[in-house]
Amino acid sequence: MRSKLDHMSIMVSDLNKSKKFYQGFLAILGYKIDFEEDWGISFSNGEASIILEETEKKYQDIPYHRKRTGVNHIAFKVDSKEDVDQFNKAFLKKQGLQTLYETPKAFPEYSENYYAVFFEDPDRIKLEVLFY
Image (cartoon, rainbow, N blue to C red; front, side, top):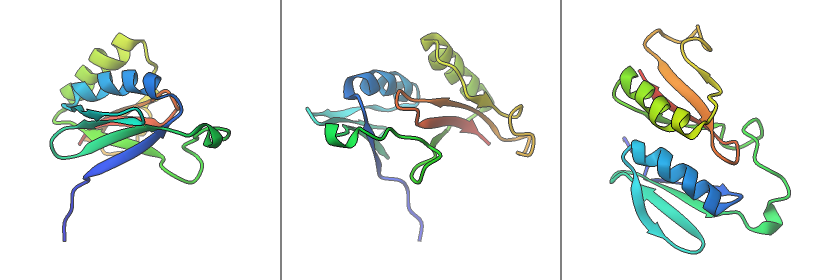
């Protein structure tokens, strides 16, 4: 049996701040706003959706950290190393966002064919755009 990711729901601390970040980030990767409600927003590429929902105030006392139990990072695969570089230039550098690290420099143990850039969203969820 094979499957594909249908959707991912991400709880965020500030929906407006995260919407602005993800709208620019995901547009470069071919995602468009699918629907928007008071409680959240959905981006779709026709195959998978990423839904942002604002965390209820009563659950915001402990902020997200990727080293705790839960999601460590989300990776988006593109078609070439040039696409990774284009994303880095068109989104991260244009927005003035820092990268966490880039391969192969950060991970010499990875195959030389693995090429990626890692960065964080407004809640510090680690994101990756990669090619291999």
